[in-house]
Each structure stands twice: as structure tokens, then as C-alpha cells.
Length: 194
Image (cartoon, rainbow, N blue to C red):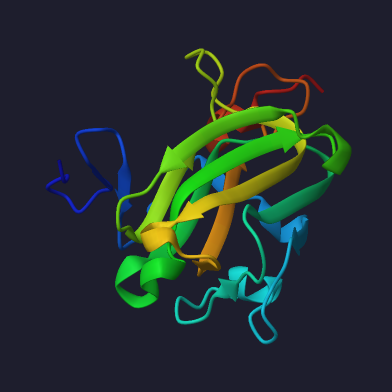
């Protein structure tokens, strides 16, 4: 059930609970800083900026009918591998998402590819959603836009609270047009012909 090292908890049915600390593989970088963020609705004073302020005490609160949408649009096609969402059932109760869908596409008109649907069970902390496909060779998705849809909340709540969202992708290869990824300075020095 729970990892002994404080990792993400998972129930027997594959539903996620969350983890307190955000731990991400060293080969990944935060990608959403250069993206345009939008939400389907928000209460005054709880807008989209609170999803990105790195403060776990603030939150985005939706206002309206479900599904509640968070759209992340990039200027160019990017490789994405991991979505991390911070939610807290202890603080937010019926405002806490219980089912999340993640979609990808070229824009609002073309969000056909549903990557994952995740069910959450009273989550407290960071919930990690892998964006890789069902094929083990697909470690990332290549997309212009990512959309997080909150399909339902705990206790049949109407509006939702999401405290933080982060999106991670692989670090680019430091040597362009090179099929191998050299990591040590010694190898990088000899990776190109002069």
C-alpha cells in the first residue's frame, strides 16, 4: 500500500492518495513556466495565478458546472512526461477532486487524445500522473496543449480546489543532432568534430 520511504500511496484498486513531498526524477525539468495558462472558471480572488505561485496555502477555486478545466498551452510542440497536482482532502473536503482526466492536442479545437483518467481517494499532497502511453517505448507525449479536467469531486462537491500544478518533461540533449545523451564534461568535450 504505502511506500516505506514516504512515496506515493496507492490503494489496492489503483486509486491514488498523494505524497507530501514533490520528488521528481533528476532527468526532468519543469516545462509549464513558458506556457499560457487558462481555466474554465474561477471565484474572484482564487484565479489561475494561484496554481503557479509555489504556495501550498493558496488555491484555484472553480465556479460553475463540472467538468472544471485547466488548459496549458505551449508556443511550440514540447515533450511532456509527468503531471504533478497538489490537492489536500483534509483542508478542502468536498472541494477535493476525486476523478481527473488529462488530455492532449494541438489546441482547444483538437483535444481528442485522452492520456489518462485517474481516480483519487482522499488525497493529501502531490499526485503524480505519468503522461507516457500504454506502449513502454513511449516515455513522453509530444504536444502543443495539455488540459486537466476535474470530472468529479469528493462528497459530490460542485466546485473544486487545486493548490498547485506542475508539468515536467525531459531535459533536452545538450548536443544538437546527436543521438546519444552525453552527461559528463569529458564526453561532451569530444562529442563533436571540429
